[in-house]
Image 1 (tube, protein in one colour):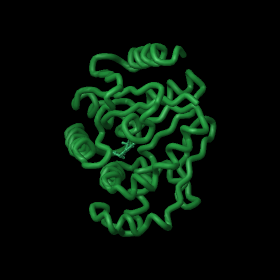
Image 2 (cartoon, helix red, strand yellow):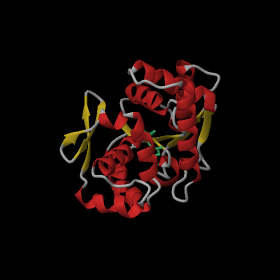
Image 3 (cartoon, helix red, strand yellow):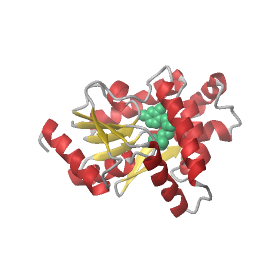
Image 4 (cartoon, helix red, strand yellow):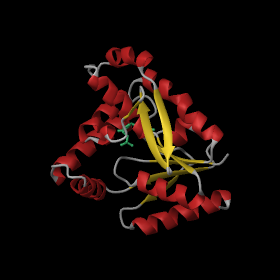
Length: 222
Ligand code: DC
């Protein structure tokens, strides 16, 4: 199976890029952030404090997560409930980042991610795909952009979804979350040694897609 890893900070456009590449290549797109979001949401709904590992760990034995695909779109099923929309609520982002610092949460999600890659050609996006989940991935891209550029994109997305927020708030939340993801002890969001860093601060979406295709072709000839 061919495995392509796309890592990077929030708002760099990983999921749009990964979805497009998956469609172009006929691979499955796996959004791993959705798994951490589902655990963050589950912990929150059960009244657990996501900054206290023991409280989050307590809910894991009763947490069943599944990924399903409908017309190429990933659905996240948490204990038989489709949480694909609820996990996108803005407050869930930081809850996901909180639970992602907990080693037992990362262990809990490891096999699910690796099994997807073992059984399918995948484009998987996240923070630690190239470093921890699929260290032998055929292609590793670390997608990044300036803080301002990323916040502008994220702000636009939220406004289009009808969420009431400000650019400043988005920028501040994004910086706090990225710092937490980048500086944690376990699986920090940093490029793998053999990743190609793609900075799209000054290129539009189509330019980013082209650059990614060039990187992929140079590694696997597709
Ligand atoms: O990609 P996202 O914004 O949906 O991810 C939400 C959080 O989940 C992110 O702040 C950090 C965590 N995460 C992670 O630690 N490792 C991954 N592979 C994907 C996400």
